[in-house]
Each structure stands twice: as C-alpha cells, then as structure tokens.
Image (cartoon, rainbow, N blue to C red; front, side, top):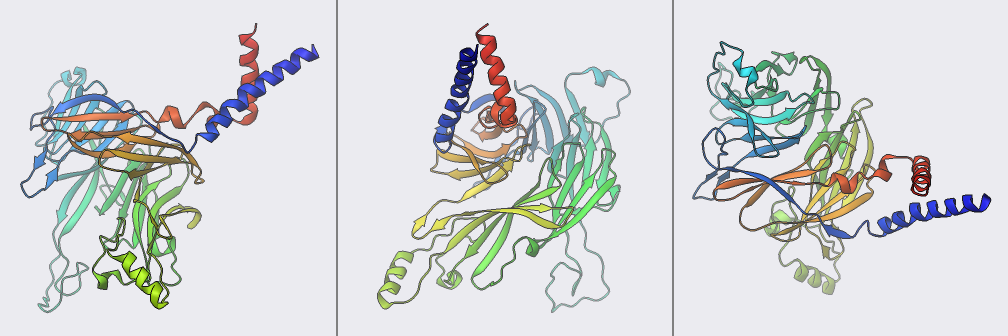
Length: 457
C-alpha cells in the first residue's frame, strides 16, 4: 500500500512540475498568436454600413471606440454619427444614430430583434457598456465663451477668462441608454443633470457597474476621477496632480508626459502610463529630434557627435526614455507601487512600446511594432512580471486601428479596406489566465491527485 502511495506521489509531482518547468522556460519565447476574422461590414452611409473618409491631403477618418463586451461588439461610427452593436456573426442588432427621436406609439419595438433609435447627439465621444448592456455615450458640444465687459486687444486669449474672456471649448455630458437604445438620463459632474464635464479622457464601468469618468485639464497637470452609481448619483470624486505622480528632483534636461490612465478593475486605483525623458543635450537647439512626447526620440548624427566628444575628452550621455506604470491609491492619495521600463541602455536603441490596456485581472499589455506587418505584445502581471510575449502578423491591404484589450484578456481590432471594415479578435485569455494561475498551489496538488486517481480506477 505504501509503495502504491509513493507511486501516486511520484506521478503527481512529475505531472505537476514537468509542464511548469517547460512553461517557465518558454515564458519569454515569442510565439505567433493567430488572429480570427469574425465578420465584415460594408463601407458607406447606410444604416448597417460603417463610414470612412479618405481626404486627398492624407486625412483619414474612420470607425473608433471599438469594444467587445458581453459577447457583442460596440463601435462608434464618427462619420455617420452613430453607435452600432454587432454580434460576432456580423448581425447589426442595434443602431443608435444622430437625429430626431421617433415617437413609439406601440410596444412592437420591444419584440424586434433589430433596434433602430435616434437621439439629437452633438458629437459622439467615448462609450462604455455595463453588465446588462446599458450604453453610456459621451455627448460633446461646444461651450460658448462667457461675455466680458472689458476687452484687452493686447492680451493673448489663454482660455482661462483673463484678458479677452474665455475661448470656446468642448464640454460633455454622459448619456445613458438601455440595451434597446432607449434614452434614460444624462450625467454631469455632480450627477444627473449636473454641470458638464470638461475634456473627458476616459469613460468606463467597474466590476459593480458603477460609471467611472476621468477628465483632464488643458495642461495635463490635474486629473479628475468621478464615480457614479447605477442611478447616476455621484458617489466618489478624487483629484490627482500630475507632479505628485512623477517627482523630478532635478528638472534640468528631464521631462515627463502622462500617456494614458485607466482605473484598476478590482481595486480603487488609478493606473498611469508615463514616459520620462532624460538628456544632456538640448535637442530643440540641435533641431535634429523627432516628436518628444510618446515617440521614440532619434537624434541624427548623434554617433558622430559622441565620437567627437570622446576624442576631445568631453563627457557625454545618450538620451534615455523610461516608461513608468504607476498605481495611485485613490483612498490614501499615495502611489502604491511603480514599475519602470528603461528603453535605452548605452548605445542600444529599441522601438517604443505602447501601453494598450489591462484585463480584469490587472494584467497589462504592451504593444511594440517590429515592422509594417509584425508587432509584439508583452503581457505582464500587476507586479511587473512578464507572463508571455506574442507576435501578431498584419496584412498590407488595409489600415489597422483600434487595437483594444478586453476584460477577458482577449484583444480585438479593425482593418479598414477599400470596400469593407473587417473585425478581428485574438483569444489571448486562454494563453494567459491559465488554470494554474487561478488556483493556489495546494488546490493544484489536490486536483492533480484526484485526476490521477480517477484516470487509474
């Protein structure tokens, strides 16, 4: 009997640790993740078509705000001013478009599988969807400048009310619609029918279906976090100062920019993706730099400059670009943790990684282009540990856009062709949130033993 138990234990240990060792060795190995083309919608101005504009001057306007929630695709068509809800088979079951609402005199609309509703939108911005498919739509409109009795023609209008008065700018309300597209109410800063928001950066819902709205100011120096319950009542408001997120002791030759922010799904955190730039060179005077914010900074003829300085014995330093992931605790008003990625070491230059989102487990996704047809996605845990790296292949016969990370860990994107918009999805959830990661070590051993016993009965 003891010998049999020892054999059981030996077999369990082999079955348990062998795949873990193999998986650990291949964690940083890059394997291609196959994409899945689900369906396509025609380009045009029809009710079930997607609007696309290609100007001769190179301006491109296409679909935006792609989300995959509760098994449906939600898409903002900015050209045709509408929100579309589409099944994974390509059936457009809801269109919420700009126009005069129609009066429904019967209950027939409730029995239809395809809903067509109108609302007098100004400009459609961000959207969010809760667990019962209620839709939140940002409605942007221009707020006219306030009148002033004194006009100073020598003072520049800086938009803050000084001198010649305030300049006009976009403000927003968040409109709530039910799953059939029926309008419910609007939400402002103070809750239902409150004052409008200024510069809405992100609209989303948390695990409890509370609405979260994140706004910023003109200089990106102050961020407002608003949380509303299911009835549109304000239940939390926090203000985050950018300088509190990145404290630069010596600002000479150093700068930072907040590239993205989003709420953590299960904790009361705001997660910030920040780039920090350090240099000993005045790149603006050299006039040899590319865009500073959010782009890889390349300085032409830098190698020659460094070699020249080596010969004359001057000190030199290459430009450095860091990326920081900052977890800001909204309850304590403190940074809970920070993880840093350095994008340059010595003479080695790497392409910029873009933070594209997080799933409901807090896993982060970094996007990095290799060339025009290939990119690498690095997936990491909230503690910065890399889970996996996956490569993505793209065709050259269209414009790819709106790469989105979904709550379940999958990703979706659009490809705009000449006649159709193609919808794609990558099922990364099965590769990342594996069985072993969701259970404790003790639970895994117990289930392995039971599985081994059942297999040998």
